[in-house]
Image (cartoon, rainbow, N blue to C red; front, side, top):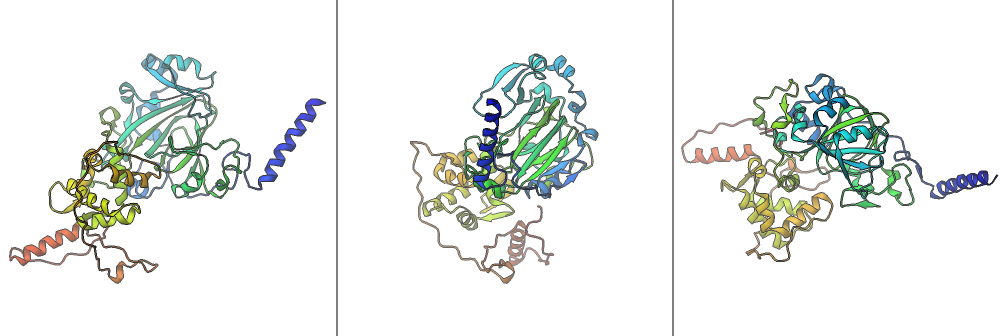
Length: 460
């Protein structure tokens, strides 16, 4: 009788809490607050690198690639049974987390692959670690990442292995991610990065990039903005891959049963270098061994975050460079403008007073940060939405010099935006080439013929 009374009291208490909150999804699993939206495209192959960048990476658009591992050349998909892993990598040390529900404070244990394979079906553990060089011999780089600059931006390839039933935090990554499922099934909840401020309004841990919300029982009184956040829900199964754009928030729920996945984490590529794809057949399988791909250089993260500022802009003059960053970063001061001019000169390696993407992609970001820590602290913090500090306690002062003259830009009617505001015109490489040709023609060295106008954002 006492047990029955206690159960009745508990049920009434939960019902009371739901009623008091008045918010849909209160004390229910994440995603119960409203029906999911659609809009996630599905394909049956890895897109060519150019299409992948243009349609998905550049636009921040997730993509489901169904059964691509069935037909693509990823040896691990066929080989990595428990027996194969034990025989070939049994003595490899792997990192193991305790518990099936992610807990960033629980720490990481180490054991051999053989020991993990002996325990994982009966204990609440899961494996997450970077693939070793030997394991990479069984992996090929997905076709979508084989050229255009992607091949230089691979940060790490991580293995996720459990008996299923694992749940991640609601979190985001500052890297793009292709997650491939070698075995099992996963439900994934995706939230567009444009709703990031709403998700991060309450209980967000900037160090680690995750929400403290209980994904199994969302307290809407503690996370009131979540009930307004749209989301998509997708399911991937054995043989599928999913592209998750950087900064998109997501929650991963691995279903019961052997669950083995690898994810390719790579830095966000702001500009696609088509000249690097001359030898890549966009219809071939993934034939580039992962063991031949070098890890991105240590400064790549800072470089790519900095370059995120520039979007579709194809090139900069010195003044337009400074003017553009001032518009994009509200905290930039007059003192910073002097630093920006010096950063421009640092990047402009050929000294022609014009920055191209080739120069931006190869800039010495480490020297730029070391020499202008205050400036880059503002820039990177603005991009990540977090707090980044490159400043040191003691740092040599920089002689700024005089502020540059104000910039005046004439804007034609075609350059007006819909709400009546104007945008500065940024000259493309075609504009610059035409100007040089006109100069040569003026010198009597060239007869200039008018060329057809190209799209400002057209690929170089």
